[in-house]
Image (cartoon, rainbow over all chains, first blue to last red; front, side, top):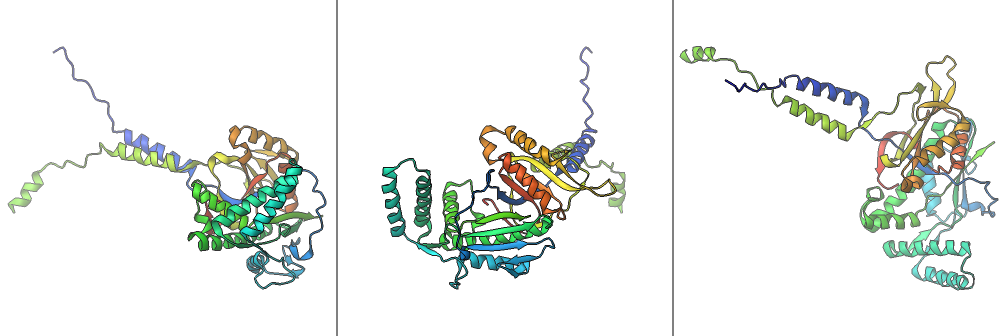
Length: 229
Length: 157
């Protein structure tokens, strides 16, 4: 016979090889993605002396070298910080020591817009005016999606100060609580206006992106950081 | 009885294992797709603090990692900084940050994120110095890596 039977390759060890590969990948890879608290740093340069901010618009949070928390001059437990920060953002009790909220309506924004446009027609390259116009456009966008809302003054800020020897975990716990306050407020706004919590809005969907932008305008995150030397 | 004796005579064929490699390969591909390579092992003791307000870092925005912790193998447990996988000093952070951001895709550079993996007991003075260097390198988006607790995860914050 000229034709010989073609010999098959023995595939019995294939499984073993695949097993080895599998175990290799199991060992060298991790399942969970990196997670963390996102923050944006201010750009470099000496911070210019800001215009004096009224006392009631600044919320002093101090973490000292022993990781103790001092809020507006009073010692506070970290577990109370979240509700305290929420109170700062909303001031539901009309406390004279907390910022006074302004009502934002279509009319008030239109009025300001007309003012800014008038000024811009005289001086079209004034960067401060352009900035202001951008802010007003954002407010209009928020009004369209959410409706009339209360906003905190543009100079209201939570001022977070720590010592050089404060521990990182105490600092991060404070950051976490301050974020939690903002997230909770944003969730409430989102539930009321769109019926889903803020965290479930998806950045990659256009409609949701618009909503996120509106909610961020209504409840801005305002934290400034400094280190006590 | 006849039935029993008959079955004893039957030859034991066993299960065919021919499809086993295929099954294993499918498993293998599954793991290759859903997992990520573990970052380089380092000799720093890092116990990350806990946080609940976390967001996931998209892989394509991840510019680099800064590790700060005490050296496990040394006796006096000094605190050191590692940039990706090499030890460095504070002064190196700026150049390193500029480099890793430059290595990213051009249209992602401004959105790129540097992750800080810092031990919970580190003093804030050092962390502040690192953050100052990052600011000067215009690496402004940072991510404090935490262990999740009672996770409140979002895809937008």
